[in-house]
Length: 156
Image (tube, rainbow, N blue to C red; front, side, top):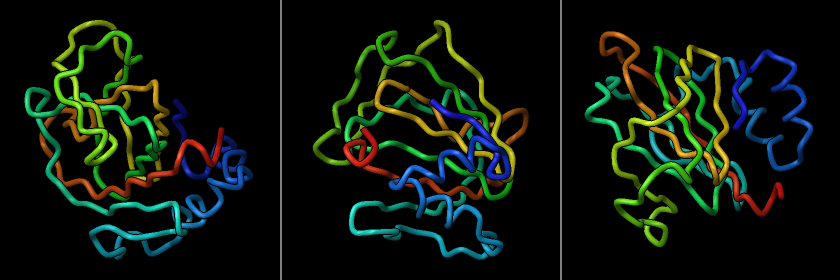
C-alpha cells in the first residue's frame, strides 16, 4: 500500500514506473474538477472510473480487495476515509472476481489503518490490501474521486 499526495516525492518516484506513468499524467492535470464522470481508458490495459458520491457512514461501507488489478484511489474534491487491513485478517463474504475483480468481506473490527484522503491525495492498494473506501470522516460530504485500475502483471 502507498499513501501520498500527487505533489510528494512518492508520487514523483511512482511516476517513473512505466505502468504508472499514464496514471500520474492524468492525476497531475489541472482540470480534474471538470473531468467527466464514468468509465474511461488510459491505455489498452489501464482503465479508470471517475465518480461522485456522498461519503458513507461506516455501517454502509464494505471491505474489498482485488487480485488482477492494483487499485489507485485519488480524491479530486471532498474528504474520504478509507480503512485498510491485510486481507488475511478478513473472511470472504462474496467472490466477484470473475465479474469485476473484487472480493468482498464480512465486516471487520480487528486491527486496521484509518486513511484520510483530501484533494490531491491518493492511496494505492495492492492485492493483499483489503480496503473499505467511500467512508465519511465526520459528517457526510460530496466526494469526487478517480479510481484507476492497473493490471498487477504490468508492475510485478
